[in-house]
Image (tube, helix red, strand yellow):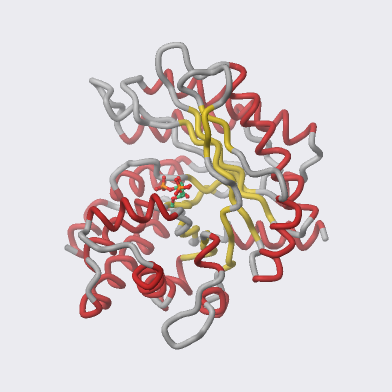
Length: 340
Ligand code: 5MM
């Protein structure tokens, strides 16, 4: 079982490939569809996601895995083929979001703790039958005056470790996602300090809960200035500080690191990843597990119209290829302009 876990984890971070995060919960996908003027229904969500999963070239060459939401893992394409089968046929590994969302943490105003451990063993067994071979659990840590607190960091780290242990017991690779939000006005050094504390707590808890690191993937935020920071750090500084922070905190045994984009523009997320990989000499593969940074362009191109399917698939394929280049440090801004 452990070898199998390690093989799945290795496939998820295979050279030149990364993960498509398509696990928006119903509330989040509604927000995304509202932005493009599309009503969020079971069929529109299916049509949109089917379009992505049927982007053959991108899926075969640049996407190693897809994170699904509970509704999607059970859905069939318009022609009756299960969406999971379309993903698996492209060679990508189907995965599933299993957390039940971030909820207010008692006694900690303004802070959240991710829930979903109750009944998780049974849910994982069902998801495995449905074809999932990896899972995702996202913890959310906000930076503001006086937060995050130790209580919030430790509660979330414990939840991530308990989840990861249950996944491995079920033969499912856990993606461990502790997201330090970039919403505030904080500077990059404050993000470094918080990310370092969070990752230290997470790996302490993963050790305590006997999680096998070789059969796990980390999905962290980059070390980056808050969106409202008056002077935001440039690409090189983000790359250097992110790599320095990860080297201090993430054991070399971890199978790989797949970043979230966290609200960066799509090109920014690609540039940062490429700059990190250009540094080189890292103990783990560094790749992407982007939601918004892979999907913003195809969503806009699609806008809910079947006649836009080809254009949407081209937009998705382009972002997947740009990010694939970033995993080897070979992306250049000029490649974006050429495509435009
Ligand atoms: C795709 O969005 C995921 C699910 O979010 P909700 O549970 O809030 O609906 C999210 O966890 C996502 O996988 C990560 O945040 C990475 O996505 P981004 O857009 O930050 O790259």
